[in-house]
Length: 400
Image 1: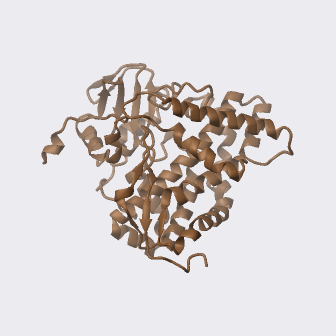
Image 2 (image 1 turned 120 degrees about the vertical axis):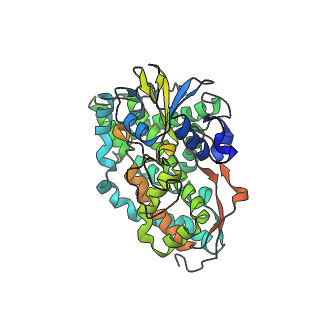
Image 3 (image 1 turned 180 degrees about the vertical axis):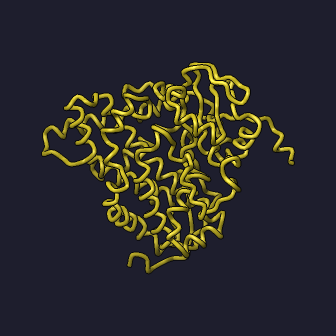
């Protein structure tokens, strides 16, 4: 055993050094401090699969009502992420049928057409920044279509959603620029709703929400919360998943070659990427009572980080958990959360990722990543890249 493995377990999601490769830290937490207390910011963390799995299913003990972030956001909206039953049940019931696999299946053609449209200009060049040229643009375009926002607003909205989740190094709190971005998003939503009153009715997700507000099953703050969550999550999760998958495949070239030769493995490969290097690092809960676990006590009222990406590499759950195997198909991973708060948009994210990666691999089956030019975003909740430059053999025949 190396000296590195004897380091004291530590977890600080506001430390940028942790963002590059948190997995050694996670392993030390699982092995030596499965209930970890960050005394600097006074929160606790769970890192093993079984503990996180149980916590997301015990909303009476691990409550979301005090927020799903470690820090207080203090935005005057009410989101489904920050609620417990019966409020959560009412909110989820309003939109859940819009995001079932059957409901979003009709989007596949539009997703593929958009993916080809974004990729085709790069096919002859032999290079592309997978994030800025493709992965950041595709999911934002799709969620804007679902919400009824104009295409010309996509870049502006994406910039605001990216800034909304950003956190400054070493600061336990929401930076002023992140609060400002959330404020701009909410102002945009309010203006969109005001304009709708003057135009013929649209058939989109916001129309469903407005109908619920008119029926008094949704407050205006909850409506704003839905628009905020759908805009941010609809962008961040798929963008970071595509970036992480593009990063991991060349690092495991046998897996890249296997997937390029057999794209029927794409659904399994997406699940394995969500397990092995998923974008959602953790979500917070607040314990409503003292919790005794692994000989430690989490006092009532304390915030607890459920580190999903650590749980997903727990050797107690998955054999060879630190190996990236696209044939594994781990459908029980926590990459999309779990329990009542399992991601309502998971089916859409899976569809977008499957179509996007198929087109990427068709255009550039031999791609390599320039790791010297990689750049990461910085957030305690989300992990992924802002820049993933790749090169490949030019493909003049793509989308010809």
